[in-house]
Length: 333
Image (cartoon, rainbow, N blue to C red):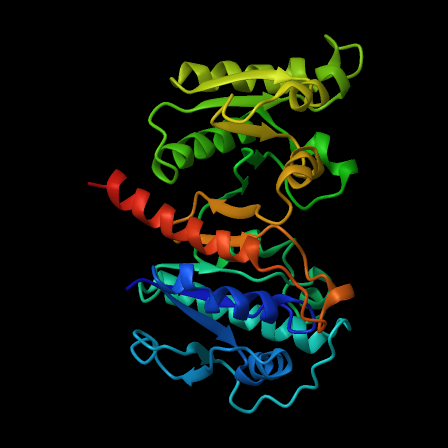
């Protein structure tokens, strides 16, 4: 049975809680072996706090995890002595979140794990711990020695890829180039085909400016960069259309109208998706050899330690990882 590595996330947030709840789910255990990665004592703290019906078990190898009825945990810190402080960001929590990601990537690169699911982390505490990445997507891309990647947010509502990810709004315009858009649209198209099993993807490309620039009246990015990129990608036999004004597009969009939506910046794509699918959305990293998914929410420090975190997005992230693995095997035959 496939092993899915699930990282601890920030143990002062809801990461361990949603990971434990997801790993205990019957629908998950029927289709894979969920293996939690992180300090055992951090998981033990929350398992005891919430009195989980399913027992947890520390393992030293993947072979010890397969076939067990318990929730298995690969302990990356046998001498863990940190004080767990639900709701309180700490550098130590950021450090162990980073180490868990490193270990999960290693398991995937070696082929020991079929895929990895990353629980939510605090970018601030990870930077304090020395992990200088804008987000987990960029970190996993680097650790897996991948040339590049794109972030795709997935739900029953839509698949939305981003031209730019974790950068300030003030830097978005100058970060968008024709070559960059062509490359990312190409990766997006290939992912929709190979990872999601769509034979002939149809992609909607959003504009950057209000009204998609209104023919240059509100900005020239659509004329000078986005339209030429669409024309070039069309010449590569990729069906990309637009640029569409983002507000009007989402106002009239209905599920399934396009196989993918390509947004210019983070909030342009994620706000409409999270309005429709906040508890079930998934973050998928396309363009890398390993499979990585993540729930679409953050650390939720405000509810950490209260036992009320919803594991639905984490459960859906595991299911998507299994689906992508299956689709990739079919595409490579």
